[in-house]
Length: 130
Image: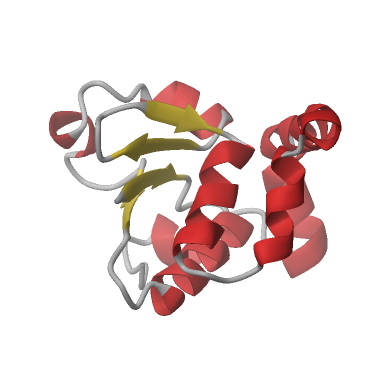
């Protein structure tokens, strides 16, 4: 089981979570929007500011993982995009993490460029489908 703490206001992030949810036929993922109601009450050990800066996940044993470790494990658990695991190979890992750090920092601008929306308007209006 992997709990993913994601930014539901980011259109690209929300879309990826929607895809993961649809592929999670074995119920191995729990998706939690860091902007959701009662988030801090439900997960007091997760700093929503830090989780907003860098994707956070929690394993079944309570261990916290971040960034591409979360993404790669999520895709592995839904048994899709097996190629993504190369991003955890030692030499590639360093550069992939740098690239992910850039993406995480500028994801709203990247979302605006890719989707035309810097923020998920359905989530901002508390009508998110996730």
